[in-house]
View 1 (cartoon, rainbow, N blue to C red):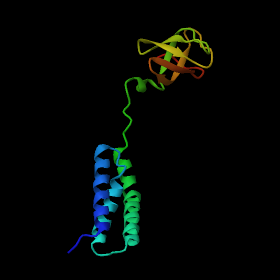
View 2: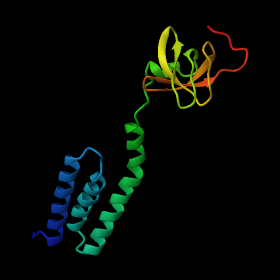
View 3: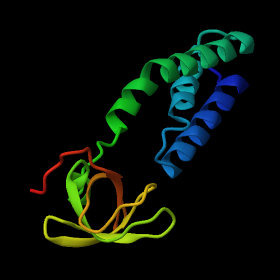
View 4: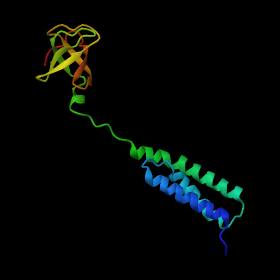
Length: 149
């Protein structure tokens, strides 16, 4: 039994794809590993390089199409809220006036924060936290009749 040149080529490609996959953790060439492995097996029974190449392409594409969504779902990182994120939606009291383009200060749950807003906010006014940007509260004016907690 002799080994065909095509089988050697598929074996070399399989090794190259395995090395490429091992050097990255992004599942870039795993699909080609599967395609090359199946093409290597097919090369033992089917002498046509065109048929082997077609098998390689079909298997690689099928692996990509069928497995990629599952892997993306598994790798999806759940956004873990931080303590600061829990402040979104809370009411803060302005302690230093806030002007558009000029930050002020606001007190939220007894803690003083840098604050900014697109509309002017006066000292003592209540504002809703729309976002936390680092150590700065991004505020929106609270609705009328809002009471301090």
